[in-house]
Structure formats: structure tokens, C-alpha cells
Amino acid sequence: MKIQNITCIGAGYVGGPTMSVIADRCPHIRVTVVDMNAERIAAWNSDHIPIFEPGLDAVVKRARGENLFFSTDIDAAIKSADCIFMSVNTPTKTEGEGAGRAADLKYIIACAEQIARSAQDHTIVVEKSTLPVRTAEKIKEILAKNSKQSFDVLSNPEFLAEGTAIKDLENPDRVLIGGENPEAIAALFEVYAQWVAKEKIITTNVWSAEMAKLAANAMLAQRVSSINSLSAFCEATEADIDEVAKVLGSDSRIGSKFLKAGIGFGGSCFKKDILNLVYLCEHHGLPEVAAYWEQVLVMNDWQKKRIAQLVIKKLGGQVKGKKIAVLGFAFKKDTNDTREAPAILVCETLLQAGAEVVVFDPKVSAQKVQADLSYLSTHQSHLKSANTVNDACVGVDAVIVLTEWDQFKMIDWASVATQTKKSAWIFDARNCTNHAAIRAAGLNLWVVGK
Ligand code: UDX
Ligand code: ADP
Image (cartoon, rainbow, N blue to C red; front, side, top):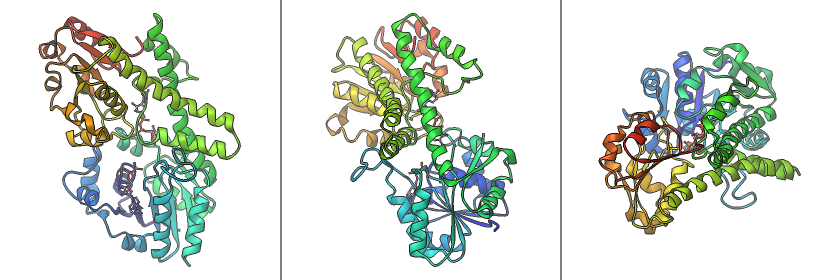
């Protein structure tokens, strides 16, 4: 078994960058990324690729048209492939058994059915999307039922984080390949071994690989909830969360990463994967384990609500008619992704309390902000966007920093203070701004965990 033709179904945040790096690092492999969303594919083929991710543009430009192709012809791409990655979305179910918690596998199932219909030879099918444990079994069943071809199903979960995707793909901590057939595992191993040190490629059985991905996200999210819970404790005492995190992080058993207190985690993975883990634990008769992990989400929601309410409290207990600037709408810096962004809940709370909200984000468009809050139809006229920090801050009673964009470190607060109302409040919910400059400009300051 040798992989020469890869097809990836799903040209999203995972499929697009992952395949671009594989194509870039393996010039001998033809990589085709397909999606049913024609607009998305057209964007991948244009000068304005649909995802903002540092370094991605350059990788796409190098490989596109050489051995990297973006297409809507899904059947043709399946036919020509010896290895197919499934990188379709797996949202949380909105109805039926497990609604609100279990992962919705409808896109995966549709994908497997289409592979079964069109595959022409032995094909390795790779799960790339995060999936519930034992999904590979289901995929195998669908393939066997609908096709005469033979298949190997591997689990190769993606660990890239948005904003650092290219770095994470080019120099991963590890690559995980779960499977049964050693030949198929070896074939995929060979692809990654083109640029990843062999000792970093971990092979496991398929169930461990599926489980490890859910567990890794749950444990990362748990660290964020742990530090955020302590941020509230610091605010109630004279402790400082930065100092506490420094002490914790210098213990090599704990490690320093993922100890940054903030507004709470967002993104497409953490909440979805924990809900899925909770659902599966309950399904397997482990209610105590389910309750343990669910608390990570409870704490995350609490942190977002607590900070939104704190803003209202500091502004005199009500914000009706007040103007508030929100700096940062993406769920973290260096991405234009707003899925599960804490800014959505904060804006909702303020708009519902009668405030006028002006959003500035360097990479999230005004249309996207409107679309994410469109469910609040009655408050839409009180939601505006600005093109610069200073424009967002004109006449405001308060500024809330919700994403840790690097440019917010360098804000000229003396200049901002000439725009805001006198003695406006600055709420730094990411602990990422120049606090001395804010105080020197005569503005009031609140910082998470201080
Ligand atoms: C995550 C995992 O890191 C990645 O391995 C997996 O493949 C997908 O899910 P992502 O959601 O893109 O990646 O970003 P990540 O850097 O993990 O941040 C998630 C959220 O936690 C963000 O909202 C971020 O701001 C927040 N966070 C992270 C903190 O608040 N504090 C921290 O110390 C770290
Ligand atoms: P992720 O963050 O996991 O990459 P995205 O939502 O960004 O998720 O991308 C998933 C992509 O998969 C979407 O562009 C969607 O159109 C595509 N997709 C879902 N199901 C199918 C399918 N059966 N065939 C082709 N593309 C699909």
C-alpha cells in the first residue's frame, strides 16, 4: 500500500490547512480538497482564501496548481483517490437522542455513503474530524454495506489550534494514527514521515486514537476553566492571577501552557468535544465521570456571564443608553473564526440590557458580527462595527477587550482617552493591554484575575 492520491472531503478550518501542508511537504502526492460548498471552493482557488491563518497563504500559493487542487467534483476526487480524509463538520446534535450533547454524525454518514458509491479500488479512509469513540466501526459498516470495494478505516485526529495551524502542522508535538491493519497504518505513517520525526508519530488502536483526541481537548479546556475559577478567587482576595500562574507553571509537573486567565474558552472544539464526552460517559453508565467533565463547561459559562454582569455592575448597575466598545470578536487572536466566541454572549448581555455596542476586530467583518448576533433581532440597530480602535471608542462609557490581539498591546490609550467619555472604564478580560498607559490616561481599569 502506497499513498499517491489523497482526497480530502471538507475544505474547512481543518481540511484546508492540513491538506495544504501535506501537499507542500509531499510533492509526489496529488492532493485534492473537495467541498459541496462551491463558494468556499471558489475562494480557495482565488487570491482571497476563505480562512485567515498566519502562514497559510504562502503554503497554498506554493502548492496550488502543482499538486494541490480544490474542487467541487466530489465523485471524481473519490474515484481517483487511494486515501480519503474525512474533514467534514461534526456539530452537536440539535434534535433526537443525545440532542444538545452528542455529536451529529449526519455529515460523516453522508460522506461515508458517497465514498462507498464512488470508490473504485481499495481505499484508505481516514477520520480527521473529531468523532465519538467507535465511529470508525459505523463508517466501516456503511462502507461494507454500500460497496464491493475493500477499505481500511484509520483515525488520524488533528491537533492543530487555530491561529497557529501552520506551525502546528509543520512541527507537531505528535501525529496520532489509530487503526487495525498495520499496512494501512504504515502507508499513512509514510506520508507524515516526509517531514515529521518518526518518534513523534504515535500509532494506537483505532478506539484509543478517537478517545485520545476527545481527552486532549477536555484536559486543555479543563486547565482554562481551572485558571479562570482561580481568577475569580484572585479578584476576591489580594492575589494576582499572573503571579499565581507563574508559580504554577514553573512546576515542571504542571507546565506553563494553557494557564492564561480570560473571558473563557471558545472555538469549535472544546465545548462540542466535552459535551460529546459527557454524553458518552453517561451512555456507558459513568454518571460521576460525566458530571466531572461537565463542570468544565459550567465554569466556562459562569466566567463569561460573571464578566458580562461585572461590566454592568461597574457602570452603575445599568447600561441602558450607554455606549460600550468591544475590542476583539474572534474566539482567540490570529483567527477570523467566531464559533462559540465569548464575545457573542457578552454582546448579547449588553444589548439586552439596553446598551449600544460598537465592535472592532482586525479580522472579523461587520457582516459576520451582525450574522452571529442576528438571533437578537430587536437589538440589531444598537449593534455597530468600527474600522479602528479609536473609531470604536468615540463617546463610549466603557471599552471591553475580549480577544488578545497583539495590536491591543500597543493601543495608544492617551489618544483613546480623547475619544471616550471622561473617566470611562476599560475592562481587560484577557489581561493583554498596557495597564500603566490606561491608568496614566486617567481611565478606570478592571483586569481579569487582579
Ligand atoms: C483546540 C486545541 O488546542 C487543538 O489541539 C484542537 O485540535 C482544536 O481545539 P483551538 O480551539 O483552535 O484548538 O484553540 P486553543 O488555542 O486551544 O484555544 C481555545 C480557547 O481557549 C480559546 O478561546 C482561547 O482563548 C482559550 N484559552 C486558551 C484561554 O483562555 N487560556 C489559555 O491559556 C489557553
Ligand atoms: P472544521 O472546523 O471541522 O474544518 P468547517 O465547518 O470549517 O469544520 O468545515 C467543514 C466543511 O465540510 C464545510 O465546508 C462543509 O461544506 C463540508 N462538508 C460537510 N459535509 C460534506 C459532504 N458530504 N461533502 C462535501 N463537503 C462536505
